[in-house]
Image 1 (cartoon, one colour):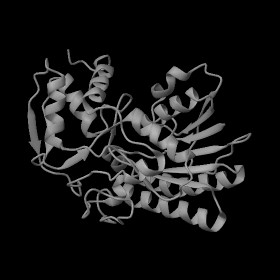
Image 2 (cartoon, helix red, strand yellow; image 1 turned 120 degrees about the vertical axis):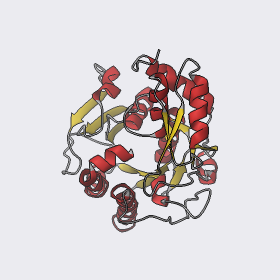
Image 3 (tube, one colour; image 1 turned 90 degrees about the vertical axis):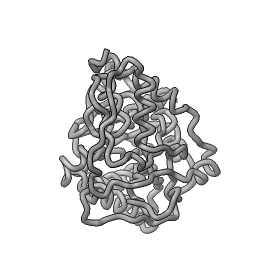
Image 4 (cartoon, helix red, strand yellow; image 1 turned 180 degrees about the vertical axis):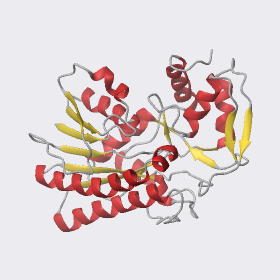
Length: 313
């Protein structure tokens, strides 16, 4: 197939591209490089089945030739990214979604939108199931990300119901792995960067807020399975093994024994969710999917990747 990926130079998209190319498909990546990084796809230079286009999907996109699948992955995805680029984040998840749905109709292509666990906000239901509607502050300091993602889901379902678009929706929970931006503020990469540089590991609040961490290869395998499954409602993708932020910090330090870092605490940022854990029953039943990479294995792979980039030794 010939497959379009918006946000094609992003962390997740670059790994998804690797998977799709390994399956024999042709991939067209589109990115405006607000948060995407050309280095993430530099290893694909010279691959005749891969093309990278610099463009903004908030504007109507013209693509020559057939397109069979569209993965809409474009958006700043870390608090540092979407707070810095608030209007762009709103636009790519609203107008960008709209534009790519129109392209999917033009090309008769199946469309998948990458939504987020942030649709659940600071949840009153735990773990989070897809039929939970969420507890989101519509004007809060994360609203420029949370609410447009919720709109993207609504827009996708409207196109499916009224215009018969062939659509899929995923809700991505915390994912980690190589090619993350070391300075984007997400918890795992921040701890690894700080530990490799012998800096204090920054834990917000008492560190008892929870996250669940899915290694990137498991996540993109799930994304691909959702695209090819016959199911149109949202599907959670993430690892249901829940642990505290403080435990994550301690585990990272245990895997970098030469680090001289300690753990320091800072005040909690506004609207930071207290718990985050997916119910993946739907993914298990419909896709036969669940994570297989252990956290220790995944963290070890990630640490080794960043040893070459960060001055921690």
